[in-house]
Image 1 (cartoon, one colour):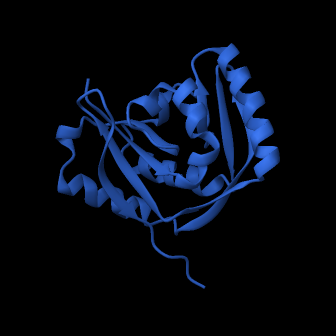
Image 2 (cartoon, one colour; image 1 turned 60 degrees about the horizontal axis):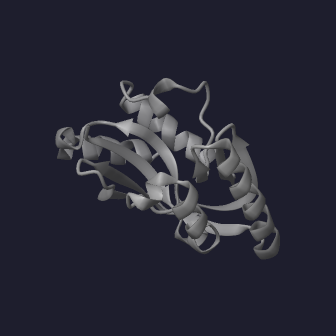
Length: 175
């Protein structure tokens, strides 16, 4: 079934997590780069019109570009992830999208709250344990991953692989 999603790409995390994601996160093999998901699932890509793209840009205009760090390894039961600090701007962007598109709840409404995260391993608890241990060592050796959030991408999967459909630039923070 065709699907789309909003994400913040984090290329500065690739050296730290790229090989772990290839081993432990199936989306990496489907073309998804290191990222922090804002909203999935979103609408069927064939229903994304210029008017929808305008609504998205207006919703995302509520949050200005910002810097963040990935400093902490964290877990869900079968997932290992890096937690961004600050997390609030990611939550704000997700909530702005949900406000404009209330039929599309984060993760289909499965979770009570939005927890921004960069998934490194997902699926089996034992693999998530292995990835968490390795990631903790790597993060300790390299220090925090520093990153900028200046855009949001709309990804789509109508072919079995994820592709970038559109990029939305965030406004620059006023000094």
